Image (cartoon, rainbow, N blue to C red):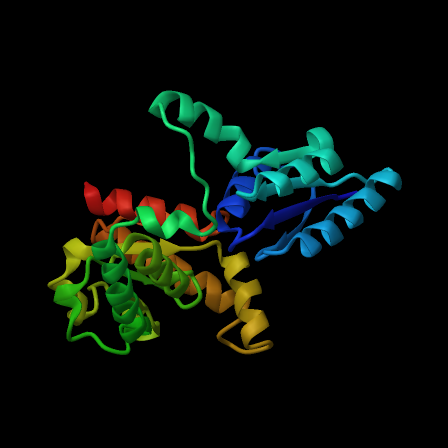
Length: 267
């Protein structure tokens, strides 16, 4: 039986959601059913959710609740409703920060953007444009401007990773899909050879690749187990031959892939 998890916020809920997932990942044997409720910007909306939680508590199905509200009254309401099953992000850290900084917090909804570097924000938008323009090898003439070029077989996670690197790290990430012609040879595709220092390879378990491709093109040669096995085998041989760093995307999140890539870039 799964445990229901409510993620509540008066803004996007990204912070509460990220912390909730990081904590719940420590219990891999347990199943969780996450429900995200962002932009609860009125007391009526919060009260409606609180009533739903009360009903679940009465039915002996109490959920876990992660929240990131800045309004003290709303936080008190949720504390009264949820008891020790509430994980209040601000309550967990704000008192300690106030003590260490020597200043009382002045919470304002959506204030996260206020502490970010405007230059970094502009870099992220520029990097996002770059990633979209250089997706799947569509344009290769601007590879010299790339911070990183991801290579790998189709559906190994290149596109979402490039977009994540752009949005969260401000990195200009291009990606190049290896096709049969590339995999039949022993050399890197010509366009990549001069940018070898920028390359990071993504690989994936062939069975997982088959499942992903089967959803996209069911019954096709592209999705067949034999084709997936061959492509992954040939690609990994190519990566080893040219000493390209490899990240296996089979069982890790986009966030984790991005961390591994940024670590490779910084070496």
